[in-house]
Amino acid sequence: MENGNVKREGFSSGMAVFFATLGSAVGLGNIWKFPYLTGKYGGGAFLLIYLLCIVFVGLPVMVSEFYIGRSTGKNAIGAFTRLKGPKSRWKYIGSAGILSTYLIMFFYSCVAGWVYSYAFKAVLGSFTGITAKTAESKFTGAIIGPLPPIIWQIVVMAVVSAILIAGVKKGIERITRILMPVLFVLIIVCDIRALTLPGAFEGLKFLFHMDFSQLTGVAILTALGLAFFKLSLGMGAMITYGSYFTKDNNMIGTSIRVALSDTLVSLLAGLAIFPAVFSFDMEPGAGPGLLFMTIPLVFSQIPFGSVLLVAFFVLTSIAATCAMISLVEVPVAYFTEEKGIPRTKSVVLNAAIIVAMGSLAALSADGKSILGGIRIFGKTFFDLFDFTSSNILLPLAGLLIAVFTGFFVKKDDVRTELTNQGKIKTGAIIDVYYFIIRYLTPALLLIVFLYYTGLTKILFNL
Ligand code: PFF
Image: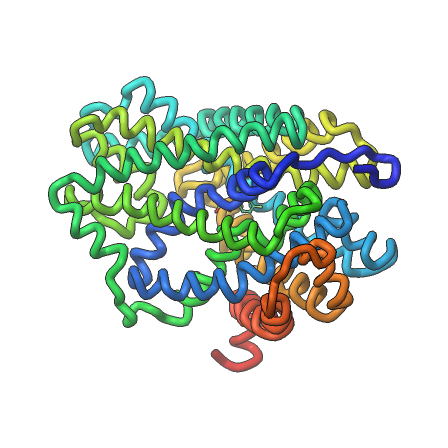
């Protein structure tokens, strides 16, 4: 495909589109955030709300991002200027997206580094015979640093950069196509082991019981934010990947398949974690500690646990890596296409920015870290990057994307692109999508945005 004077790569088939997009969606969110949030906010009841958020907010925004990306064949900012002209302010949606990807990458690369270091230690067998005390000291040792977290962050960025330098087809497509099926196999191995432990049923009950009393307003907002983060929305990742889609891809079908498979991975992760945790009477709502302390402790005590631990952290590393490549691709595509910087240079430049700024996150992740005492707006660097991107910029960009596609592009253009020039029969789906994207999605995202910016307090005294 030719755009301006830049020769563009793209994915080569529907299968490649599916695995790459799923690779972006599946990440630390499934294995770390989803299980403990589901546990914390009422199990099955939270799950139900999460699914509704996926249907009414996640899927419509995903379809819109695919539309914007594929119809223009451009990066997150270039896509808006192609649709609306170079002077249009809509391009700032793309700028906000790029800003979010950076903020997310600063802390995400740091957590990915911890995961890599755990996979490495699991291979070396360093978790054999650990106790609650040693599990904790191993975790703090890995995150306080100063050197180990930064070194591992650099390793993560080196791996991600190597994949991206290889290109869209030879890098992103080839790697996600191999690694996503491997991830499925590994997670199912972990599930089988966890579910055959004595007392596993308690873990299942914990994950699926319907406790509506925990379902507070904050729980619902959390579900909405999680759905957004999970599907990699509001940051230009899906616009950029959409621009690499094949022209015959059924984008509504792809969105549904990706959302379903991603939710399946989250559930499978919960099924691997909670039965094991309950079988050893451990604390299920332990947050980050669940992944880095409870899991090594529990797995090191069960038969075949050391193999399982390797499998578990390798699969988590795979998830984090494939998600990260989609994040870094956003500014890389922008720099190469809009600024004319060659791809390799653009990747190296972005990796350097991420390591430099990401080290602020790596050095502030724990109260005892070197920068752990510094507060900006009451938050550490680590929390500030997470909060500003996930709770403010993503819903804001999502809201604007919904309004943009709902009101500022011709419905017929959207219909033509989504039906592949009328080749796909969609029935009433496009009209339903249109209604949701115009009214429901913006309303819900506006609530999230107002809530987290504190404006609900000022405006409605809530
Ligand atoms: N979807 C990923 C996860 O759930 O971990 C996170 C993520 C990846 C967010 C890529 C944003 C993104 F662009």
